Length: 510
Image 1 (cartoon, rainbow, N blue to C red):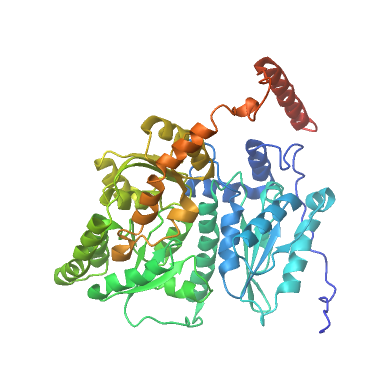
Image 2 (image 1 turned 135 degrees about the vertical axis):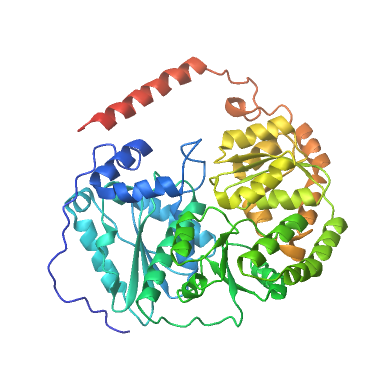
């Protein structure tokens, strides 16, 4: 076993941090923590997040911890190490969830105490951890992520070296009070890496990608089903183009190819920080995606025009693929009313595909924000009478199920739970819908089998609802000899006492 050596002694890199105000810990509330972070020197980054990821109309959609998104991006990249700085409970939850979703590598963790947090030693500990891990034989990049408490306390990751022993160091803040969803946190990291890679390329030659396209390429922005980039590549051939890397990428060198794309296709339209880096590199960004017949026709037209393809080339691409898409949609029809909601960012694309398959879709809710890159999809859907709800709350998604009484509800876990309790068939968007091809001929009809099978289960749901009738709900859940009595006054009294106690705790020391 090789011996682990520690770095030579050096002067401690202590940073004087303003102590976070009492109540700015994990349970201090988003407003309190945001204010503490700004006082501690994080105003610039939080102001940028407010521009990139606007909150309204809701403060924050009910999603998982946003840092899960950036963590997943880093864990999927080759020769990339990840270090988290945050409360132990948060780090435990994030790493547990990441490994549950298939991560096969360790996550570094820099713990802290009240003393190390407020004296600045936490920054010193982070830097020491980075120095210990910066082995160029193992890693190209180390990603360091501040979670809520270190961000609120102003831990300055920007002061970390840009590289150590040739290993790039990328520091990001991903607080739950600054980044609304885990989908947008993917953009936080993707944007930070694109910025680093763009600046590297501006300074001189960079490492060649493992695969170099022989034609001008189209960079695909946003995670998608693995078969979709292949299908997009086939559709681009008549235009004299190739499918480029998918951002977030799987290795660092792909970032250079992504920046070198002839045009950027914002398949997921909320990657605002990434778009900023592509535009800084002089690249044009096109919204929407080749979904369904109408979507594919419009997307190929937009890509062709942006890259200078001739009208005959665009017509050739249309003639090669649109009839196949039309045939696939007709062969696998979907009949029924479906509500769609989720927090992945592809909800509008799924709704378009369902409508072209024959379904009635009265409502689409997405936790992601409205951007100009989603306007083509929004305009198409609204022209079909669909209500499109950005930054949708759980309550609004559930209200849509109640309002429209769909034959199938596609949504997040609590939406699915609510629908099934009402004997309405339902599918979890992330695992059962977004994990399928959506683009081009392969995507046409891809949802029909699972969607039609789910709607065919309506009779089974009715039988189950009848079987469990009378078991109670909420406070009366279960089977009772004497059904419990609801006590709303008792609950209101103690809710008020808890709120007063929390307010008093927050005020201590302020």
